[in-house]
Image 1 (cartoon, rainbow, N blue to C red):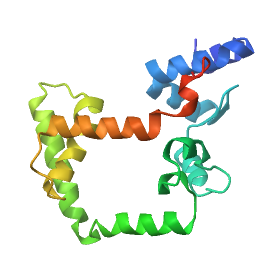
Image 2 (cartoon, rainbow, N blue to C red; image 1 turned 135 degrees about the vertical axis):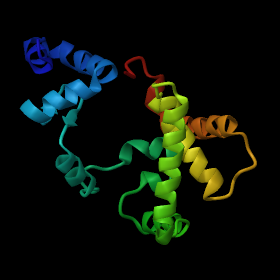
Image 3 (tube, one colour; image 1 turned 60 degrees about the vertical axis):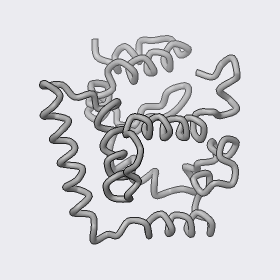
Length: 178
């Protein structure tokens, strides 16, 4: 039975847990069906958008779709602000670190690392553990010059920082945190 047929047949209180399981177990198939049959899915807990153009439209409306959820975790950090002078200034600083003329070089660096991972993977590639972690570390090491550390150690540092900033939300300690 298709995802949406199961979703529609489920009781209201079962719909979000069902959807959450599909997001964990079959995200590509789920979103393929959503794009084809129901690109905007309203669940009891949230609304899922399956089409690129809808996601881009949402991202272009920071006053409607805010980052307010992150304020308790990151406080006054620019990532917890939408369209403020601080956000604009800090984003400008971040952009200044990357010379746009270097983008072809960075693309080639990413492609070379991806080729190395594919060639060394024996036909398998763990996107989460390897590609999405090792390639950014390679950019940090080779482009930004922070090349003194072991890549796996740097991944650990990055992971800890991301967890502290984005996952240690006050609501995570609540009994209904899911």
